[in-house]
Image (cartoon, rainbow, N blue to C red; front, side, top):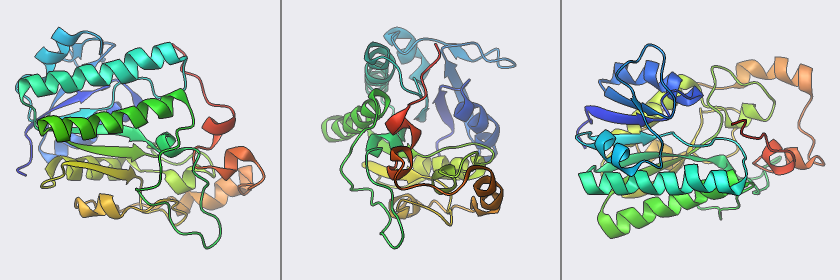
Length: 269
């Protein structure tokens, strides 16, 4: 499809949103920013809650596509997850449908399949078709988002690329992250591919760099035109010296979801 010009970026004040605000304009996008909180230096950003359906409809009006990063990104009580991640994502899809937006890039998560055992030794990479096994209410909400995206394609012809993001930071901070890390530059490459690939219908992809220690199969991401350029391996020696190798007898190391399996980080708000 032709490259969208105007893209609504929800969750624009968050960690990933901040990175993408800096990187995506280089691909020719004009970003319309939305967040629950004001964004310093961005006076035109839309400040709105995902529960405000009228505000969402106004925010999506006239955009060519949406990158949906907003919501709770850690574990939280189900009631909070329900409002922000489940009802909020539904509200956004309804607004997009009502305003005729043709494509959404949805920030899913590896925690939608967090109870999948991680590959060890000569085990094959985890395929995108692996059954969903969420590790938290947060992961459950991302499973819902993928199903919602499929429904809106089948029912309304609204295309989505659901990206099961690993960890997108300037550099990996743990031994586990060596396998699931996505550099910010590769994140922008993947979002650009997801926005511009032809006939995606509803496509689910894993989101990471081409890491030497990769756990999952990037075939569907590459089929969109994604060509990752980075690898976490230059950080491996230092992190392993500090933290040790992963221990398969440790439940937090044995499954894809890592710490979310045993002691999930809690949303602070």
